[in-house]
Image 1: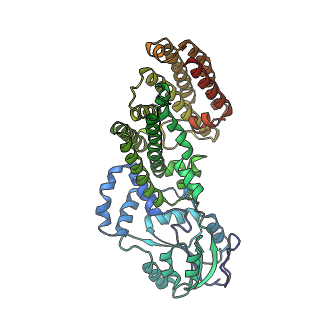
Image 2 (image 1 turned 180 degrees about the horizontal axis):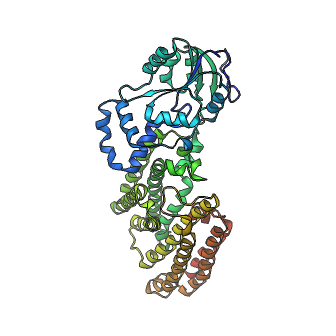
Image 3 (image 1 turned 135 degrees about the vertical axis):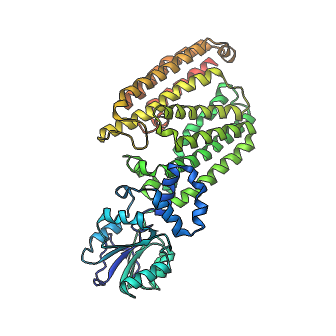
Length: 484
């Protein structure tokens, strides 16, 4: 018997008289209903976390039922395994059964949406229908060796032991071999889970570019030649990166429903089902704690700033991002907190002018981010952004506020040039006037690019990868060096 991977959408023809029983979590669905419902509930109200242990004391099935009673999932947006769907579509003449350890209240709507199953067997609050319990239920309903079973996990070996044939949905050759010792393996299908590339995407390593803002106080205070300050700033950069990646994972886990309705965000690893939700739920606290441990090594003041960033980000993830205007103010504050953190790390006094400039420039960029999303939404014919407080009518207002904030930041910088701080730090402060037209050009250009629908979701990433922006950054650095 060969265990080589077949062409997609196999149709096991040898067992035409047998029912085709299909597992849900990790098999038909590139996700897990238990974690989907848990995250949906916590996204709605994080205080439910204190009730979870009480529900779990009554058993796993009881926990699933309590979650199922309180949440509604959207079957039309769930990440399905296309290979399994194709196989089911190719076997219309066979009785097909969706059998899952997830709760019936959430499994049944999925079966009804797909329209591929004649029967649904699932947990109903008393017993968790997994392993031997699922095997017993299928044997009692269909008979010993009278069904083929499509599944993906080691616990499913207990079901394959009683099945006429197995379809293994996994990239694990050892699992396929173990299944072959229990029954005939009819096919092996890929799981569609991603690897390292999916993790790089989920951690948003490219977003670490934002953490370069931590180095701004190092440059503005002219401490970029002091080894101690350089080490502290780089450690702060890494600490912020670890904590930020943990927050990005958390945000993606809590935003599954709205991300799946977004034209680009639906391809994020957790929304698309290329990374298991449980892995993200474990990685989130690990990364966050590692970031705080490194922050404490830098100094306590920096650790306090990082804690402030984390708390604000949590508030943003759970609540504030759904409130129009407040969300962009918070986003601008989170950019500015990075600069505050950089000053705390090198134990340098923070400039009033730097704070004022950063507040307005980052408000402009935060509004630019929302404007880009609204434009994309309008092009897709949608009226509102899922999970946000904006509608299509807000586009022109957001554009006006964003450009105004950007130009105000240039005015703040112009006022700084003649300040006593500028006179003390720069030998030729008047040279800095050359930065004003450069800033005006760049702000106008990024808003023009966004207006044309050519802007990346994140303006900071756009600025770091856009060739013209790179030239402008280099020109700005040259002007600053000439002023020094």
